[in-house]
Length: 336
Image (cartoon, rainbow, N blue to C red):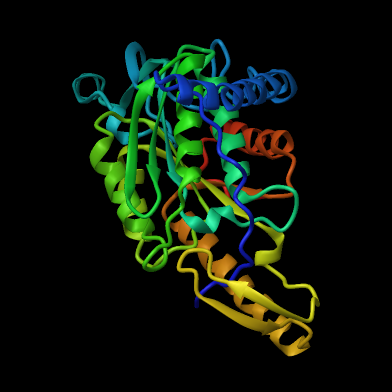
């Protein structure tokens, strides 16, 4: 089913990198200062509250890739069979596994869906702003501890690849690339092809990484298989963006709605109670199918609404991941 949403205004884009031409430098100076202030405000109001929650000095919710052999012990039911030491097992006549000390330095990738549908927002914020806030917070938290973050920016197609690096300047560069995408948002020929985005991610990430797929998942079908293939090599976390108006329509009378991605328009009578019920039922079915697909792929999901408090949402997510790490359980459920 096509999703029809009221077109939300795109906030004016800001630029962090000044051109060398005097005119461009003068025009970009104020926006650059605005984004710098925005990141500084995030650091004071959000990141300080979250620092140490996702990435501690000794234990963390996100695993690195380096491993050093620390010990050998008898096999237990929850152990990974790939860690069995077969030579020791043969000598002692009982299964033994290797115990590793993990290097917590990690590489994280943000796979960013910045198609036109993320411009929608029925309140003070659009989904694009929620996406930028989440990326800014997580990227800064990770780079403060020496980790590297990169990004794949997808609009109508793969538009930018930002290799993983660390440091505050790199976070600003990443946010600038997201803002640059918002400057010109061309109409699309059809719905977002999330499958293409996930296939590109699998091809462009050679090392095992933590991957945040940030999208509203309003896409053509067929993305489930590429997501499952991405999970086989990487630790994948789905960050699902949504707006409350996408789940239930209020009674607003006769209103014009516009497909955010194709520009197609139609008039809808939201005063019709039957129409609102059908809309809510179809939206609920889509929600259930989306959550089932993510769970089947073994992907943890963080659901971010445009009216959410970002800190509270990330804290809830971190708390559930801690329980998962302690229990050695499988994928946690999607939650808001």
